[in-house]
Image (cartoon, rainbow, N blue to C red; front, side, top):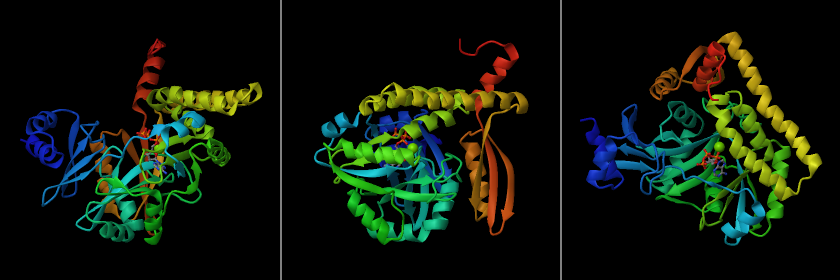
Length: 385
Ligand code: ATP
Ligand code: MG
């Protein structure tokens, strides 16, 4: 009978027929989950017009739907993609490297959902603590249905490890506000976010769609600054945005991914190789430039991976450590519970008080990499062929 409210959420909340809702409620395409007194259903893949990561929350009055954040298509040849895709002008925003967070309010309380569609207790805590009042005010002005989307960045999170000088250990930069399901024009959003004392991702300029030259220059500057890339948006959202990443990030992702070759590395390599190749083509690189890249790429492929093999041999595991700053033990407990319920393989290293903060240190174990290394060391045979 646990299926019953899930079925209702899909039928009454998302408008699927009763029959389809019932069928779906028994599959792995949806998952029932909860946070405190909230119960919600998560879409684990795109269903109808709803994207993966959509939440359907049961409220006193009915259902509140938080649509999944849309996938952003990637450009690899700007001089081709921009004129074909855009209408006239293109807003260039910085693409920040962190994790996607959708913020919404229910009964004047702020909640934060990850891209996958789970209300993350850690992120909810950070958002409430740093920006709670401001977000409540902003969302109240826009109406009960509004959603703020942004990137949570800084190394102090359980998901990504990238440092930004302007962010410190954790911060939140807004890139979209949805009102009744529609994104506000970039300029309007920037104004609102500033007015309420919140932070926007950086706006790097506005160009004509035929001026890919300027965009390439912006990207080369970001590349030297070791930043991730850009998201290019129509000023009035008449067409969906496109993304493009720097060579620095393409190669650095491979380096990070290859710390756990069987978990991340293998999936990271090929797509990023393609991005690099077309960016060399577009920039007209010759032998000298490509050989320089070859060294960087080769190091990214080999050095972290070989280190992970030695580490495994010595310590018996391959893990990634992370440190989180909390203010309140309630959230620490909720976070640990949350990770276990999601099936993340992790251990707590320590929980300590530092001044007024609670410092949580944990390690995420790389399951696939560990299993494959173990097999290889046991048998001497390849786990793949
Ligand atoms: P997808 O391929 O579905 O877009 P992904 O998880 O592979 O998702 P990325 O390659 O990181 O994502 O690119 C999309 C993500 O970039 C968005 O989901 C968002 O979290 C992030 N992002 C960072 N800066 C911006 C920005 N200025 N505008 C929009 N998204 C941004
Ligand atoms: Mg990202």
